[in-house]
Image (tube, rainbow, N blue to C red; front, top):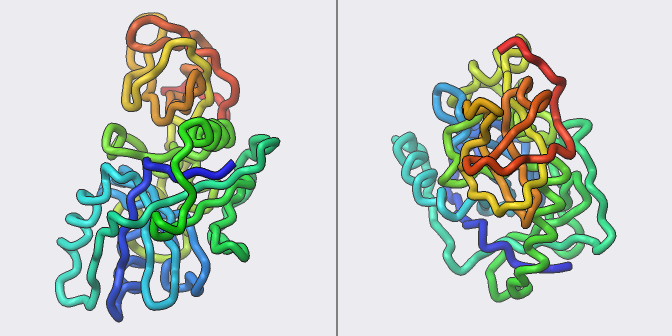
Amino acid sequence: MHTQLPFFGVVKVLGDDRHDFLHNQLSNDINNLAQNQACYATYNTPKGRVIANMLVLNLGDEIILAMAADLLETVVKRLKMFVLRAKVQFEMLPDWGVAASLNDDAQPIFPDQPHLTLPLNQQGEIVLPHSGCLKIAPKSDLPEHNPQHELAWQAHEIASGYAWICAATTETCVAQMLNQHTIGGVHFRKGCYPGQEIIARAQYRGQVKRGLAVAENATPQTIGAEVKDENGTEVGLVLNVSGSLNLLVVKHGAVQSKMFDENGNKFAVQKIFFDVKTDE
């Protein structure tokens, strides 16, 4: 299957200081990202909350960022605040997009080790650890949008535990809640960046109390909607949706009992990406 993914927006980063600047702002090692390599990364608040997660692609003369289209302007505006005297320019690319390719028989592949860099194949696609590929390019060079193929791609990413933050969920999670430490979105030895201290403390002291869960719900869900327990108490959020399949971020202990959406429809948990803890 091949399809454009309207979810994504694209920005180009230019200037002699582009590597250093992004290295100091994002959670991965941009200084050592080689030409024609990509990586996952997060952009965080000083308190460690993920503003956006993204793919970073080094094309040599420029660096390309792909993230939720509804966060693009917010992220670029915030990054520009910290440019100061650095030689860095940002250019949003409305004529560029992101396309996915995935084998029809692809099965979920769960994160087992961080992939801090991602290769490009001969078609110029970024090869992802869950077996799918993404291509960032002018829309004229990409396949047309196919809604059914888009749903299949989203279902594969959800089932594999690959979350995407958008405007409805920005600043709701730290990186570990989104599996970024296991897919390779965080480099723990690269030095300082916004939120680094919080993310490192969460990693080494085990302070994260929420994580990802894949769950079915017969009722269509809204991204950013609350997940509740039997008493109506909030225990999580809906992050991503594909048909009846949902990727939730929930309190660890919540999966040991029943969980519902805001209208009382039950979530049936299929997979969790954390060890169950109840000491909340």
